[in-house]
Image 1 (cartoon, each protein chain N blue to C red):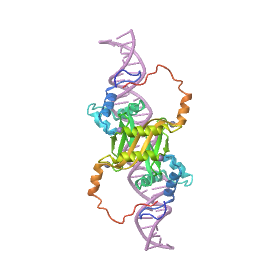
Image 2 (image 1 turned 135 degrees about the vertical axis):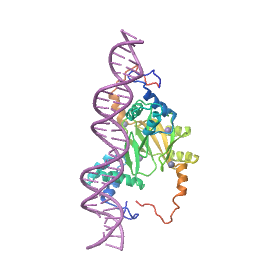
Image 3 (image 1 turned 45 degrees about the horizontal axis):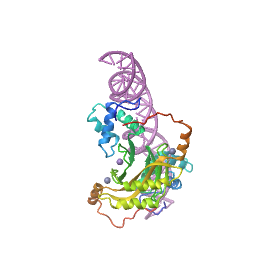
Image 4 (image 1 turned 180 degrees about the vertical axis):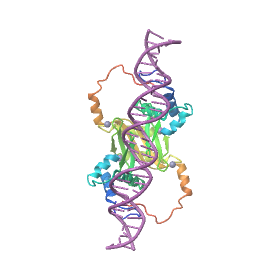
Length: 149
Length: 149
DNA sequence: TGTTAAATAATAATAAATATCATTTAGTAA
DNA sequence: TTACTAAATGATATTTATTATTATTTAACA
Ligand SMILES: [Mn+2]
Ligand SMILES: [Mn+2]
Ligand SMILES: [Zn+2]
Ligand SMILES: [Zn+2]
């Protein structure tokens, strides 16, 4: 973000730091994580300012909001990519596959009525960390049936 | 949902109607839409009951929660599928492509450390309705530059 | 048909997000 | 530079979304 932009938009320290933080942290931080992170540099920043800027920057197209398990996260990476999402802990990791992007966009071309500009695939499963912590607990009782519907 | 299930789970009218409503409405209803819908039959149902059951049924694996533009939506369709998401109005429509599911799952096999059980691709763009309502407004001023970063 | 754990309705409490407003500041131009 | 002004901030109030509480009701089961 350089001071070369549209009139009516001010490049304050707060705004610049929020965007910088998200560009340096591709782990999809939450509002609180952004707040805590930016506070390292701007100790007196208000949480309302963080909220307002995340909304503002998202509307301006400089950030993207995602939501996993009900928690709102932000990212500044606009290079199309995919996500590995853990159903257990709600973590979200980037995953790149040019192949898959190409394939999806090709399929998108055949969709009518809806003009598609980008695609992203979510891979749902269980992350390494959660898999390991599960091994220790739950010594697997037998005869336990799953829910019928 | 039949009364043939796990002990410790009661099949109340409220719960049954909430699930039935979501199975009959694949348009990914919001909490309020579920509430309004179910109230047609159960006029005295409490909103807290709707919230609790949506949470409960999601935890039991009978519903899935999705979130578009900050609003929480629910669906009961567990047949793997994709979504067309309008960046403008936040609408979300189902889209089926067996091909794409297969392709994604094949790619998933090569991912290590993260155990993937399902995939779903989001197609982002602009829906028919929004495209048409845009045509009338915004007679497109020239010389209007986009934001630099 | 009676018993009881689970669920409900009503409502209170909490958390997340937005609005308000006096003060400060970035951008602009004398 | 300095002065001006619209935009942004910080502090806090307000609103909205979600969860917790509790007296009452009900589904499941003996
Ligand atoms: Mn990402
Ligand atoms: Mn769907
Ligand atoms: Zn995990
Ligand atoms: Zn739309």
